[in-house]
Amino acid sequence: MTELGGESEFERARRIAEERALVESAKRGSRAAFETLYRNHVGKVYGLCLRMTAHRATAEDCTQEAFIQAWRSLPAFESRSAFGTWLHRIAVNAVLAQGRRRSERLGTSGSAEDEAVALPDPSIGDAGTVLDLEAGLRRLPAGARQALVLVGLYGYSHEEAAELLGVAVGTCKSQVHRARQLLGERLAVTEVVR
Image 1 (cartoon, rainbow, N blue to C red):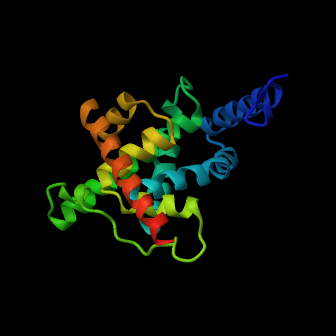
Image 2 (spheres, rainbow, N blue to C red):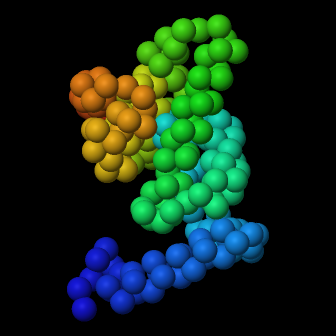
């Protein structure tokens, strides 16, 4: 049997079949099945929301909103894609809707996307390269961070990410390029400081 990421084809097929059964049960109203789906996916959804928003509380709110929307929309889920993929799209939409609401509350015209998020740097001390990368992501301007997270970390194509973000494909490509450039500069500075 071929191993895929440490998982045999048999194990992968079994996991997919179990998830499909849970989805079908949840679609029929089983809260226990949906709770299992929640437990299986909450960490990944929260990670996506955290990387896109760079704020724990906001990520928690977006994660909660994503699962509420998933529960409400589950009867319409047609299983054309994996449940996790569908859930990620809902989470991205929750993050973007939260950003729009925040812009409206602050009376901004969306320029908040161009402001870098200034959070404490967890790389001070002996935190390592992974934390340096996470800190660098948090400091990117929102639009660039969101495009890079979707394309660079979650493997969406530029076209898919552009559609999710509601921007032109060229804008998405330039945001990813900008994010990589800024992240590279910031990581280089961190290495020099060490």
